[in-house]
Image 1: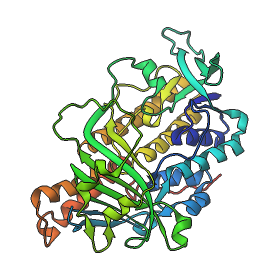
Image 2: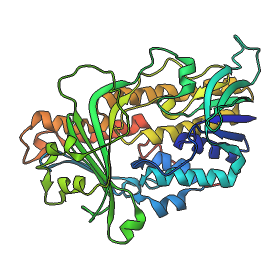
Image 3: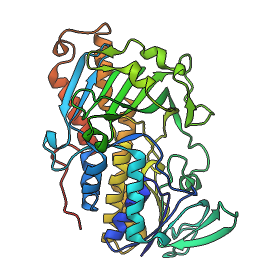
Image 4: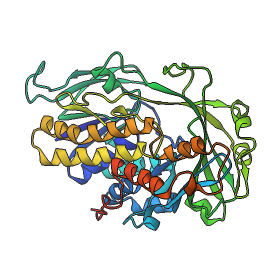
Length: 425
């Protein structure tokens, strides 16, 4: 069996490694001409780390990523609402990591080149069309998927075929667009994100991720470099978030989704967020570059699959960056798809099985993230005690906070009982 993967992001490269581990031929086609260490920080939750460890990446992750020890939520006054251990500190069999997305991307890419061979990963290849899905409807039953790629270098078109075609090409997926050519637009949350990375002294224990504020004004912060931590410093990934005033339009801005901006666009809103354990204005000031993003997702689809063609990761289920779940769910997709392809001789049946497993799960996360996911505890504290509190238990009882945290873990598949470590092959 040959599987063609459109997109060499986290989902696409992880899928290639998972298929190779099972003896399934994989080939990756990436639109960018060069794979570079771009981006800022991401979190790899324990269920994702379990899959990556099974792929033999555990030691490499430990060398570059921070083993996250705790997650905490605060209000806008720096008063703690909720705190919980994470990863092995919470009893999981594997760690949770906070890591630079670019470093993780390059780890996946370099490992894929080593294991699959450089000739199996093609850059500068843009998907022009899906010519045939092998669906057995318009196409003859049992026929491979056929697709056309355009070379960025010289514009030439070439037709390719594979037993399975997987669109792992992100929120602007060309494969998804071939299924749903109209009406499938990103939904704007009416909130903008500003992201940066700052080298500074560690805060708290140097291994804690925290979020502060509420749904209309929030600050997220976590360290992402283990080498720097060992030197007594911290590379801090941060995200500032504000609601766009005076609009009810869910159409995202038409400007560059990754544009570089000056801190003056948003920093004044956080000017008094200085607490005894962190100075947020100083963290913002220390960033060499700040990038602006609209916070968007898409409505869950009725289906991801057409015959021998399917979707994976953000191409299938783009979601708000809430609950640290985007990359984790792409990695869980790769596990489910790989298992299905090894269990079913008919590729079309395997893809339907994969979709039946993953589509309802991820749709639930998309919708729950629109309700702030586990971060709703900050909104509850803000609404019940907008001027702060002396005892959080009198505002939001501990049992209520714990239930929200557990419910989201169960929905997303990383409650402690669900995560099982598997040995690397």
